[in-house]
Image 1 (tube, helix red, strand yellow):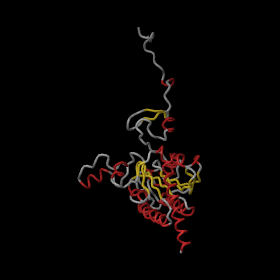
Image 2 (cartoon, helix red, strand yellow):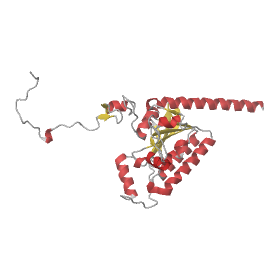
Image 3 (cartoon, helix red, strand yellow):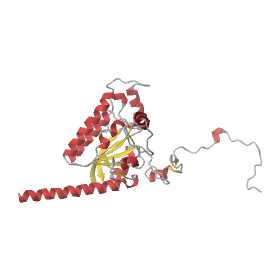
Image 4 (cartoon, one colour):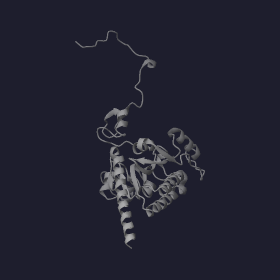
Length: 297
């Protein structure tokens, strides 16, 4: 005999009385389809508890992961884009900027700040894909350039976290100029022997890959991140050949010598502090040798 038996037939619940599961309580992994609570997903730093798929996160989450106690000073927080070309596509560029700011709470596609990472002072610039696909416009280039200047002024290492679809078409040539500007600033950072670590996350493409993202003293990436310049379809049509399996994944790029290592997000903070501590001790030894040589001379 069944444990439940419906006595009345044709029972229906009015729509207004139906209880829906609130949005945002559960996370379904796009790779392995495993379902977990959003609380557990966030606790696992937005990585899948089953297959370790790294979900996209923004500057807010990266700053919380990397800065001690999420304490940092933000740089150039209120800088916003102008409209030098009076650009219009489906809507005027200024209207798009206002709508995107309202939807995301961000002023542009990068945030910069400085603080301590496991007790070590550091300057960080982090891109946000939620803001017009993380596209690189004049504000992005200017904020990164100023963050590099801050690193030079305070003698702190510089960490760039890239996540971008490339140059921002609404600013055309102004956007492309940022490739040269950021690269020139990084050359000045290198001359002063300050470390630059570039973290490439999913996706890092276009003009960002062709400039500051690949210029690190250490180029590192998260597992499975898409890294490339042009899209796979464009490349396939250009060379007329099928592309290798896993083409433009972080693992493929590492295998072909364009990355130094891949780091799990859950280990990112400690790996970075170990790397910076190693570089700091190496500089201390070099300074000691220089001082000793000066005394002997």
